Amino acid sequence: MESITKNRQSPAALRAMVERAYGPAQVPEGEDWAEELGFGWFNAAYRIRLRDGARVVVKIAPPAAVEVLTYERGAMDTELAAIELLRKHTDVPLPRVDFVDRSRELCDSGYFFMGHVDADNLAVLAEGLPAAERDAYMERLGALNREINAVRGPGFGPLSGPPEPSWRRAFSRMFEDIVADGERRAIDLGRGYDEIRAVLAAHAPALDEVTEARLVEWDLWIGNVMVRDGAITAILDHERAFYGDPLMEWGFTGHQLPAFGDSSAFLRGYGMPEPTGDALVRRRLYCLYVALVMVVETYYRGHTEESARDWARERLAESMALFGTA
Image (cartoon, rainbow, N blue to C red; front, side, top):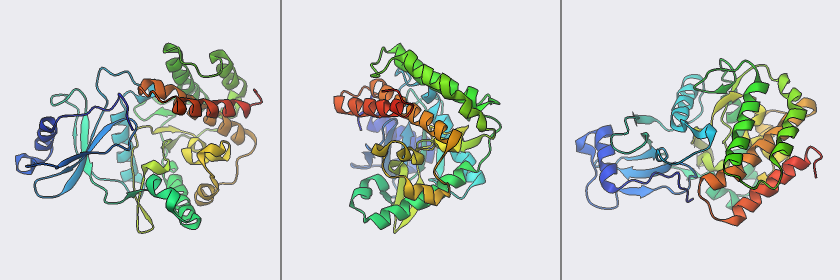
């Protein structure tokens, strides 16, 4: 996926990164030792074959001069913090982290090396899988997501803090950040900015039901899931994690917005009944938030495909309709 946030590097720069991470004896020689992994939407990533034949992946944060969404600032540090939390408190399968460089000496952003996961991306396989096999993966993903959400936080909001004692205040700030990101670029959302703010204001009391901060991955869709021989072997891309309400997880979104896919198997694996009452109101607010992000980020990524923007605006319109706004 093309994006102006991808900080692509020359072979010479990649060799220098390898030398710093693994030493001069592992610097690759010859040709075809580096391959860009193009499936991601935000960071540049390369699969690299070291001189001894071992394969690793380097993930590079966006260029310093490229403006990102407010919540994406410091995303690499968020990812590393989330991986550390998951390693300490869960058995969720993760790639190992080998080396981190925040110095900006070899390129204009931070980067880190991790082990290569020899598996298939579930998003690539999903359409060709029998329904029962795909549902089995989704049930397992729901169970893993529940394990992630069992990690408690010191308060609500970014992993880097400061912790917010109220989920209403933390989510309202997240919501306003993405609205303001759109407003700053004068992005056409298909709905008025004040109209969207009014929906949150009218339904914010439902957020007060959440009193315990939990680790939320938020971007745990099938494109961040690696599988092999019927098992989930790794969960990738943790840069959007925060402490909040587990109901905000991506896997629940299809319950309100069918375009995101049937969430029944995920719900079964998670062990959660369909939301009702204030929980249902919160789910609708979270649908509105994700739709806002999907519209606004197309402009910050430099995407030019109108079809992607139109699709995201349709989801925003559907999310507003959940609140009775035609």
